[in-house]
Length: 323
Image 1 (tube, rainbow, N blue to C red):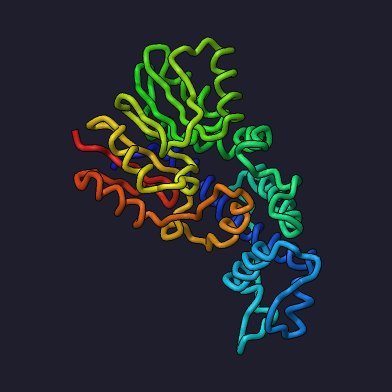
Image 2 (cartoon, one colour; image 1 turned 60 degrees about the vertical axis):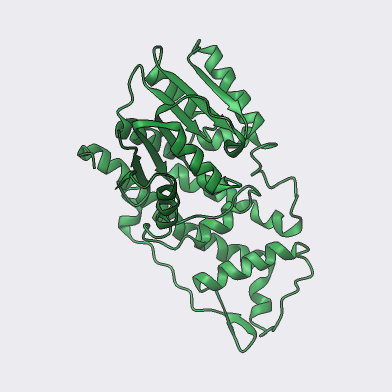
């Protein structure tokens, strides 16, 4: 495992503290959503079944009930729902080491949830990678995203001449990473959203970065030609339609001695309940759910049992392919 500078440790802590505090914020948002859509008034009446007239989207209601039971907002006993024992505490430490713009971003996402209660395809739910590419471009410009890109840069020690594959690259990261590896290196991004890929390629062309390109295709369907020194997978594995096929492609695409870096929420490593993140991320139909580091590493080892693994932190995993 690489010896990280303290400054990197500090930035990792900043990200992970922000995620932890935001999990509390999202739990509070889940409570407010229940008040807004009238779930708690039904629960207080000891209903054995839920059928709220002004929530036409039953699938969304079921997701809300399950999430609320898991975090203690609701409880079910003898077939009846009731209001649970829910307590949430914030302390001074929670606000000393966070990125407030990230929490504000999720407040915007949470504000869309009640529209999902009305219709699964409500136009005010701006979470689609396709039709809402401009919204995601704003999300990818969040300081939180800039910090994790900086950490990835330092983990991999990216430099001019490196060959980099960025899976689920979005619209902002391509210019950032391409600038580091060019002009003698190669940057290839893969992005399933046509809109995001178009924005990214426009920015690359504007800067004259002819060593960089973003391909608009699902990674599981891509034919990745060549080998790469480094592969970046930031906030993407939970959106893969076929994660086994995707991970197999990753292993075959990294050069001997190369590295794959994952940045994500791993339920078995983080020190908070991921339920609220899963609920709000599921507003995006492409979201499949978080996977544990154990599941991820187990699947990767099936394709190459000699991969060397470093648990860099609760949210970063670095995989090195034996030279």
